Image (tube, rainbow, N blue to C red):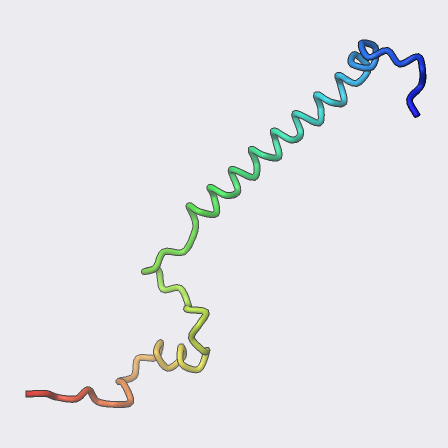
Length: 78
């Protein structure tokens, strides 16, 4: 239940500081989140930077990364 002697104007002035602080904190958090998203996108992996494919098993990657010739010679067609 609300008290019968509520004065809205007095409550506005009493809560101006905390509400302003919460607004400033929300704006700073949103700005930091935007900076984080932009930084993550800027420093992301490029397709040609030699990143490891997460879908390829480790055993196949180690064979592919080695400086050995392929196990099967390519077919020669004439």
